[in-house]
Image 1: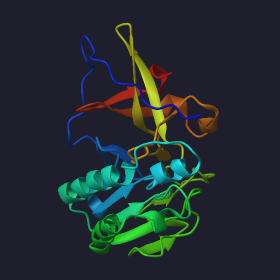
Image 2: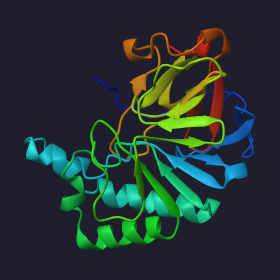
Image 3: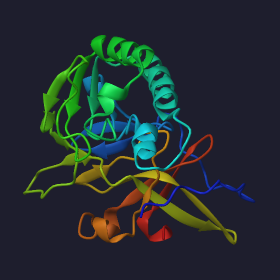
Image 4: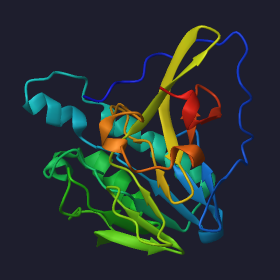
Length: 244
């Protein structure tokens, strides 16, 4: 089962934080990882968001797991702030935007209006995921199994890559742990090598699956792989060999 990131402890001496303008190079593009978990592609005026899992709280409640039903409101508020800050022309949601196929119908009217206003103001693409195999019916945007963005394939789950193919995906909710001065720190993260980038889950209630877990086997060339861990106030980059 995915672990929920533990509270991040203060480090005696923190590793150097990345500057706000730090980028991940992939396919000749400069991709900007954000502390919120989104990925900004300035050259293409695009903001990529993965695994919102809206209405996860109400979905869990249906299964008898009682959690506060505030995840959608929290996630949407964060998303509105991020979009306002980056001002992209295009929004791409990498799937699992809703936690289940009926999630859109459980949205409160106010939240539906807010989400519709946000997505309707941009060129929005909804990539279908395993939790939401059908696209939203009440929200503006284009539905797709995948899209091509410049040299990159954008899809929900990691796929087989042919020669010269590159991808950005979600689905696995990557997270990692790093030891520093005798302490263990956990967090969500981006993970990438020269061919593939997997994004952290954006949803307020989503946890993270350790990058050393079996589902990641064979996806990355570990000698060329780095993780970008989301800290409290900064993003920290580590080689894959530092994680565990």
